[in-house]
Length: 165
Length: 277
Image 1 (cartoon, rainbow over the protein chains, first blue to last red):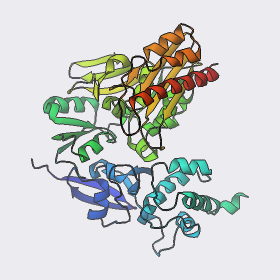
Image 2: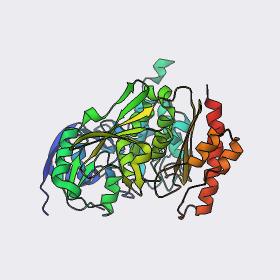
Image 3: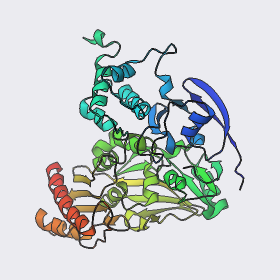
């Protein structure tokens, strides 16, 4: 059976895109292969590990378990959206650097996007809230301790915090 | 892995979904949040020739006050259930259980209708529907019908929804003042329950749904009648494995699951009593 191609319009990291895709194409493949955004990793490919986490309309999803056609008309943000165009890291990335929140780095794009979703809703999360929001992200190197500290670092150093005091 | 090839159809309403199902019959599958169906398709355990995407039917995504019930649209996400203000008072068991399903990313996508129609005995929300004696609204070519939770879950991954029908709404009786508890035993946060218990108790009523204690989501009639008969928590929890047929797997033997059911029902009864007001 020859399934026909479907045209999808997805806003990716602030840019409008129009692409013809096979309906069975996964969002993670769409990002990596059609748009060459290879920061989003394929880890387990079974919606467990969270390495493929991206934001879909601002909420964290596992892009290995979303079809590209499901993202049609919606907004996707990947890890490539975090740093400034000149490469300056954002506060969360700076936290991962400062607190050594990674070793091999494979899970990091997913960790960063899951934490971006957390901090957008809860700018000052407790350790428990950080751990709960990372239930869907596996790291096989750090034991999570450094990742939790990285997120706390980002919360404590977030822009405008000084103004609150 | 990548799913087998399929034809993709996007529908904008329940009526369009039913028309598409009528046309394509058992070759078609409905796609809601996709977090039960897509993993099966990626493993090629499900190979629908036509995939009918309901993701854009916004009018099946709601949580409404409906008098003595709360009406929940089938495409309401688990994340919506977790954060809904109305549920915190009217159906806290539903909100609490929804917050334990999978992980945050799964709850962003997964829908209440999808998890109920999947009919997985290891699912959390089927047990909640049973404990709360929810009514399920099913629409098909000849109109709509209402089915009780007891008549909905028929067997392993099998529900009362026919191939040309669609679950559109779930109606939960309000829990005002009734004690409740959700107990989920698993080894890692994002895992399915090895055994789980959803329980409401108080005001002369008792509802107990068991997770993973049979080939389908199961009501514990033994515990319910013990509680209604005034049994102590110890005596009521002692019969929690009666009438069950738990499976065995790498996580637990059948005997261990029976043990867990007794322990978790005991904990649920104590917690529910502490919440009655």
